[in-house]
Image (cartoon, helix red, strand yellow):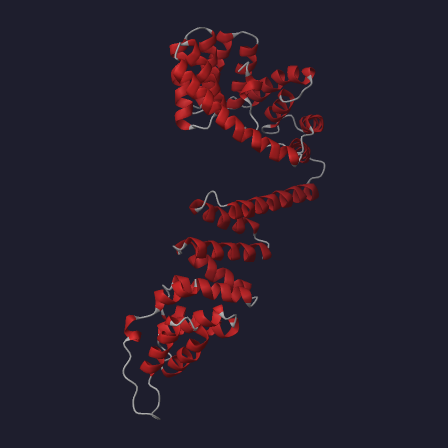
Length: 397
């Protein structure tokens, strides 16, 4: 990073130094600049520092000399000295984003968190070097976290992830921030309203996360007992019941999906789930009607489209089923269930090569999701929605 920052700042004019005057004469600013350049080319920044210091003493308004001296001092760990020169350079030339970033890093090292936050946040979005932007952004997150501003830290992490969405370090940092935010919110809720329906709803979500479905179902029911009109709670209970291994729970899910729709006619997923239940009973026309209703409300709903394709396929209306599955995969090529359904549909349509291709895609994504399920299983927590979906377990869908 040192050489990159310096090369960006060094003026070509500084390399064209005048010849040194007679021996014993005072060293000119140009000679200090020439010597500094020579030491830098020789990769000897320690010797370049006094030359830049002399140049700054002779020309206090020389922004490039100030900046270069600040950079060299920073990378020597001489933060207090570096800060003065980096700040002077930024004040003289505010568009030196890399120098302002180094000033912020310097302030962070000196424990000046307010100053560091101001300088780092001002430039992190304008840095083009990926590695340097990441260093600056992670330092800014440390400052924001230290100042108990997790919302700002989350926003910074999101900004960094826009440029590097698969960076494991950034993803972990984002996970930690959001975990802390969730913990803070849960603590605040438990202090402000420990007996509330919302507290029971939150408890249910935490129990779902650790795969305690019976406990989650009980907590959702306690929430409903306290406030039957609690937004979303009937659908959430229905989902927990539907995912249970207990047949009585599964049977009770339908009533809760209907209650969810009664309270909110725009609860599209409840409509889809009721369509699934009708399809499993063999009521394909009733299921198709519900899926169509869901797609009218939300045209991009993949579950509804896959369900409707299944209904058409089982009614031997294969040509009607095909476009729905193709549309789902156009929007999301990783949809495992859509690949599985499309493979089966192609077999029915006597297109063996297409069926083979879709089965291979299904197996590829199934392998990925099985790996995800193992990871979450090792942590003994519920995997994110869809991460553990297995088309084999949804043969009825």
